[in-house]
Image 1 (spheres, rainbow, N blue to C red):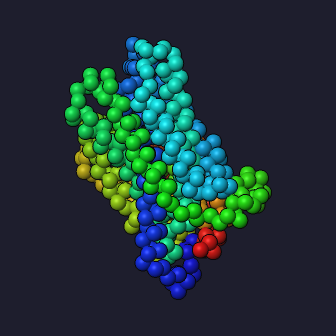
Image 2 (tube, one colour):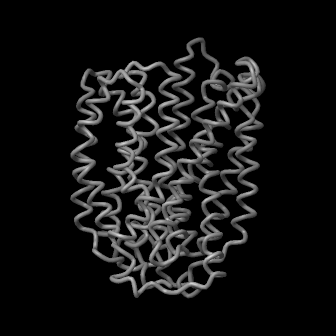
Image 3 (cartoon, helix red, strand yellow):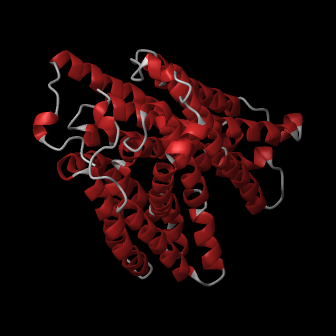
Length: 436
C-alpha cells in the first residue's frame, strides 16, 4: 500500500507548502496529545480521588467503582467514532477536531472543579460519570478524524513518516500524564494530593486543550466542499452499502492491533508486578523507559513503510506478532532482571510499531473521502472498545482462574487474524493517492 508505484509519481512541494503541511501535522497532533493526556490522567490519579467520590471502607471497592467509570468512558468510543466521523465527513475535518478537543477541555475542567461526595452526595459520582462520558465521546472521535486529516495533509511519498506522529503524540500524552503525576508526588504529601492536588493534572489538561484549540483554528480544511455537500458524506448506509469489505478489513486488524497494543502498554505494568513479581517502582521505571523508546520508534517504522509499502509493514506485524507473542510473554514470566524484562518489552513494542506507526493512514487509504473519517473512526472505535478495552480484564480474569497461558494464546490467535486480514490489503493505496 505504498503511496505510488514509483518515486517519479511523488509531487514536488515548494518550501512554503512543505512548512505549511508540517505545521498542520504539528497542530493536529497537539490536540491528539492533549486528548490522550486528559484521558489517561484519570487512571493515574484514581488512587488519590476515589475516596472523595465513592465513600467506602474498602479501598478496593472504591477503585473498582472508579474503574467502572473509566470503562464507561471506553464504551462511549464507538458512539464518538460515529458522531465525529459523520461531522468530519459532512462539515469538515477541522470542525470535527475543534469540537473534539473542546469537549475534552470541558470534561477535564469539569472533573477539576467537581464537588466531592461529602459536599453534594450522590451527585458527585454521577457528575464524574457524565464528565468521563464526555471525554469518552471526545477521544472516540479524535482518532478517526485526526488519522484522516494527517493522512490527507501529509507529504506524498512520506505519508507513513508524517502519519506516524499520531501515535508519537498518543504515547507522548500517556508519558506526559505519568510525568505530571511523578512531579506532583515529589512536591506534595499524599494527604495534600488526596485533598486537592489530584485536581492539578486536570487543570493542566484543560489549559493545554485551550492552546490546542487555538492551534487547530489555523488549520486548512483538506476536504473539498463538493465532497462535504454530497448526499453520501458521512452516511452509514453509504459506508456499509459500498465499503463493508473495507470496514471489516479495518475492524479485523484493529482488533488484533488494539489488543496487542494494550497488552504491552497499559496492562504490562500490572503484569510485571502480579506475574513477574517485580517491585511497583521498578515496574514503573521499566515501562516509562520502554514507552519512551516505543514513542521514538514510530517515525522510524512509518518511514520504513514509505520504502517497503504499507501492506508489507502490516504483513510483518501480523507474522512477527503471531510468532513472537507467546515466547515473549512466557519468557517474561520467569525473568528476574529488570533490564532483560525491558529489552523483551521493547522488542514486543517494536513488532507492534509495524502497525501503530501507520495504523491511521492504512485505514484512511481504504475509504473514499466522503466516508473516510466515519469508516476509520467507527471501525477503530468498535475494535478498540471490544478488544483493546477488554485486554486487561480478560488477562486478569484468566490469571485469576489459573489459566494465564490462555491469554497468551488469545493474543496470538488475534494476531493470526490480523495477519490473514492484512493479506487482503491492496498493494497500492485504493483512494488516498488520488486526493492531492
